[in-house]
Length: 356
Image 1 (tube, rainbow, N blue to C red):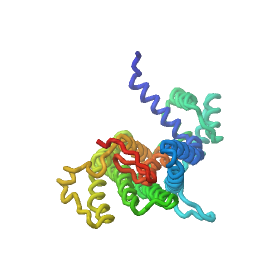
Image 2 (tube, rainbow, N blue to C red):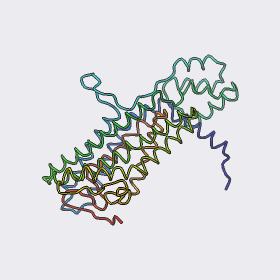
Image 3 (cartoon, rainbow, N blue to C red):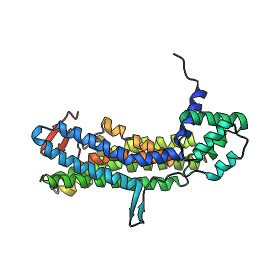
Image 4 (cartoon, one colour):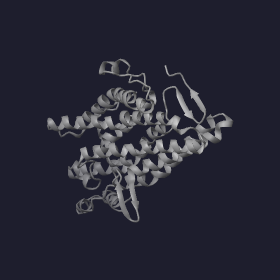
């Protein structure tokens, strides 16, 4: 089997990155995401409801509708912002990129080939170029004008003007879906007349775990990576991306679980149960009993995909913004059902799995 040369891989990656950077493509993702997220939530809610015993399905359906409804609404609210009466209450995380009309005009003034001119005009008409068309246009610019950067005047480069502000915004806005999921869980408990107060502590603990482990601390790690690159005056986008991702894995994936469990045991458990003693007295005890409160699972690890997306977003990849609601929603749903290792609570029915 032939091996793809490194140069060919890098070239293909550049074309693919530029393809995804198209403002028209980002806008299309933005417009379809509410329907995609709503449809996915409805499909999962139906599937999960059908997994319940027949006499529990009505209750499960009501709870799923509440949790998923609040989850979808809050995730979209967090990422897209809120307008009321034509007034912007707060801005979301997604800012749609704009075409560089001056840059496009500059390119069109050059002696372009007929095909290249058609492709540039297609972008100017806010249409999406195919991958093959982006590749052809980049090749044309490189061969005929000896200028690989000319494509950036047609499709703007990915860049972020305020990465630390973006990280802070991600942390704050990541909290909204988690709170939305918890709210949906409480409303669902009340609608089916379950004891919401009894189940509320698990929702708070899981919400804390999801927010700290999968959102906030990962952003702290990314920020540390960016600071390190600034300290050494590293400008390479690839190096900065790797440094931030390393920070995410170090602080979020490794330390996040320990910190979330420590807070759960020392702060949340005593808050809801005055007779419950703090189980972690020291850092050594925290490390020793690292997974006794909530151990990470395969899904928890896979949820760090949103951290990779966050790093990409902070690096200026605008196409990632529209898909963030989907990534936030998994954490929000788990918080809403009060997930704990080994027990998935929905109504009075519990699905117990081997947590070992």
